[in-house]
Image: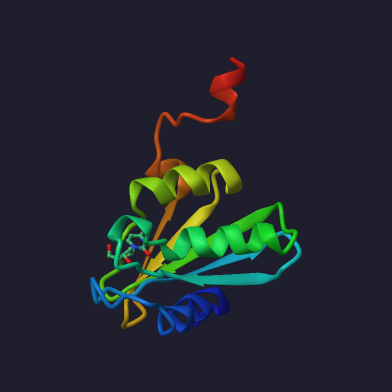
Length: 127
Ligand code: THU
């Protein structure tokens, strides 16, 4: 299997999801070939929960990466990205391919642009 998908599935096993019992892992590949992972981290104050995708991309930014090639998201049943993650991935990564993978390794390919049509972003502010 693709190493990016394996990284996302492995990160999923480290999710902290005691409230939803729904574990998600994410892995983002950078321009220089690095793979940075994230998992969802939940809070008893539910709204403070952080999704796996935003953990991965913000960790990558913190490690100095600025250019991203593709993203993989692993969950039990190939969940798609929530609205907040669609916005953040679009702004930080642009129109990258995104692979959703379930616990059996079944894949669906989509993209940041397909998941967030007519985005509001920095270009909107400058128009
Ligand atoms: N979750 C993610 O990690 N990524 C998404 O894009 C959708 C939702 C997490 C948040 C929460 O911990 C759990 O899934 C259930 O909503």
